[in-house]
Image 1 (cartoon, rainbow, N blue to C red):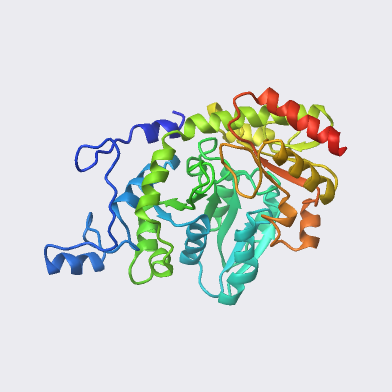
Image 2 (image 1 turned 60 degrees about the vertical axis):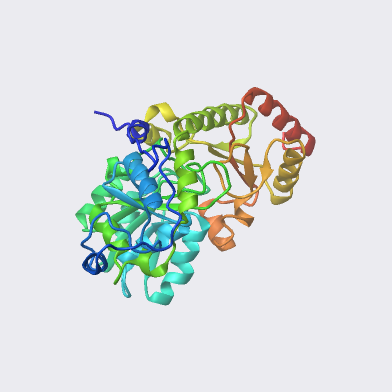
Length: 399
């Protein structure tokens, strides 16, 4: 039977302590114990349902984690204060000095910078590969490799990772497959396809209102317990704890995710088809011209579409900047990084979200300085939006 992520979220029902339809927010940094023995047991990791200190966990954070685990089909989940606050501890929990990671070459700039520039300080090395070439992935594995790391839909080139095939490779070599699913919540369910750990920046589509940061690590109970362990847990010791008030607000927004993703996808597909018909170099997984189109179709939960992210290449950074500034002036969206907002967001990744990647490596992977990344909004009349965008493109000479 097909996995139904939105149903899993809908089936969760919480009651606040006074009967509220939203769970009560636990606005405390520390928690009391009725007996000294229970405190001891909690430090030993044996007292289920007891709260210790908000860096470890809170009721509000556990509610959100439970909902996200249900959405991704994992045993449990741990939320963090940002996407990077989820990604880096997950990697560090699985790797020690001398270990090796095989990573997709096109990933979020912050993750790339962590693996390329910071992890080597800890003597953790990474091989960056074209994740769409499975033989290249397998050939990069060494006796010290611990992790294969990728994004379902890569940032910003929108390459599609074959999660099932990567899972088989990781299992064959005794590795863990970590998948960042930030660009494709609901549309693709990596754990259902064999991923060991699913990560999200909650800042983006899941929260959807660009008013807070957040991250989540979804996995087995054993792995999440290890992350929260008071003695050697990366989340516990590095301290990327989410605030309870933020956890409560993200949980409320999660309830409308299925509606929003459908609209993001519908609008993005409409614009992608129009842009491509106009002769623009357009990349969107929903287009038949996309090299990963069939693979995405095979993996997807069909009703949620191909996501809200698309790119066009206008040939150079000056044209890209001129177009984005004009679209912002016409209230078509914001010249801003990030994604998943109700308004369209656009940026030139080469000089923003992927600027951590050296220029020569950007060229090698096909990331040109004229590339504009769009996070398509929830516009009600997308045909009107297209006409207005097209007028801007004509004015600046892109069309």
